[in-house]
Amino acid sequence: MPRPAALPILDWKSVFESGLDYKAWLDAAESAEQRDKLEAQRMALMLEPAAAGFLAALPRAVHVVAIAEDWCGDVVRHAPVLQRLAEAGPNLKVRYISRQQHPEVFARFLTNGGEAIPKFIFLSDRFVECGHWGPMPECCRELIARGKACGDVATARKKVSACYEQDTTRRRVVTELLHLVDIAVSREP
Image 1: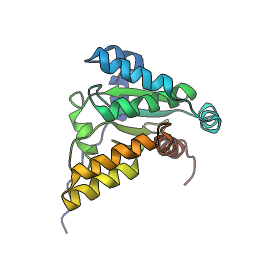
Image 2: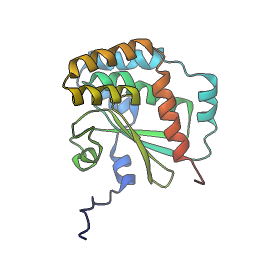
Image 3: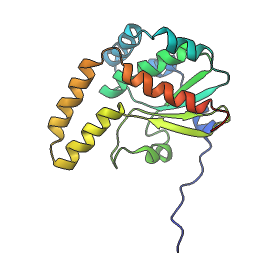
Image 4: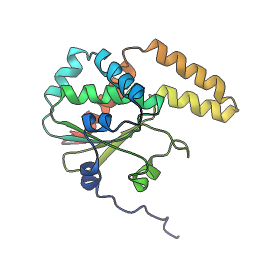
């Protein structure tokens, strides 16, 4: 039986190091208005003490490559969450890249065959890929997939908006991201 084509191996450390930290990424934003929205979202988000404690006690580095661009509404909603987590955990290191900067990376993380951001790729302290997240919480991705399946994406998007309105503290996003951090620091299966 023929072997399926394999994707080339990525040098995740180089990809990570080519990215911008949050401040530099914000400074490079295309829109001052979007930059202000990102900062307002970040400032408004408060982590629960258990989440902050978990992040503060990370035993080793977790690297996150964030494919994000400031023009995107989901980026404005979710990148500040990732940044708040990084602020609480000195061992949580995040770098931001654009889709155009690393198309070979972005092509691996399409959402149901489509381009959607943000995408957060979680890497261990040795830059081993451990998981990814995005462009929205799992329940919202499912709604969009169901909308595509039945031919009613407009209604699915309305339901996603309702989910966002109900989860103003971003609890779902925080929970899903913390789960991936926990996987990335694992020392045993």
